[in-house]
Length: 194
Image (cartoon, rainbow, N blue to C red; front, side, top):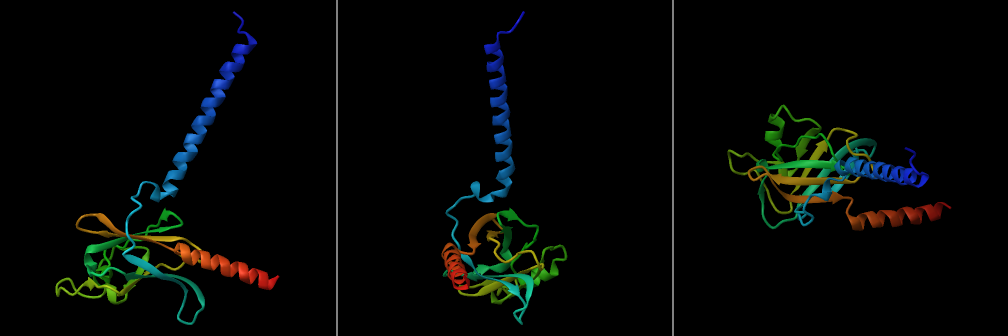
C-alpha cells in the first residue's frame, strides 16, 4: 500500500516537532543546576552583608586572594558556632566547606576544604565560654583558597542555622547599586581614554 505524499509530510512534521521539543526540554534541564535561585525563596534577608571581596595582598599586589568580608547588619547577635555558609560563584555552588563560622572550631575541623581561614571579630570566641557571638556591626572574613573568586565574579553567600538547617541570610556581591556604579565608571574611563 502506498502512503500519499501529504501523509508523509505530516509524519515528518510530528517527528521534527517532538525532536525539537525534547531538545529544548533537555537544554532547560541542563540550565537548571546553573541557576540555583530559581527554586529558592526570594524574600531571604541579607542579614550578613558582603562588604568587600579582596583579590590583592596587603601590598595591593594582585594575588587573587579571594577574601570575602561580611558584616552583621542585624540588631541582634548570632552564635557563630551555630552558623554555616554555602557559597556560589557565578550561580554555581563551589566546593568550599564552611561548617561553622567560629574560627577556633573551623581551625580544629581538619576536614574543611576550600577555605584557608576565618577571621575577624565575628568569628571569635569560645562556645564553652559562651562568648562565641557574632554581634551587630561586627565583621567576619572568609579567606577562600586563592583563585576561588576572580575579579568581576558574582558571589552569593547563604548563611544557615545549623540547628534548624534553615537559611537565615543571603547576599550577592556586587550589589545592584554598586554594579551600576562600576559600569558607569568603566564607561566614563573608556570615554576618557578615547
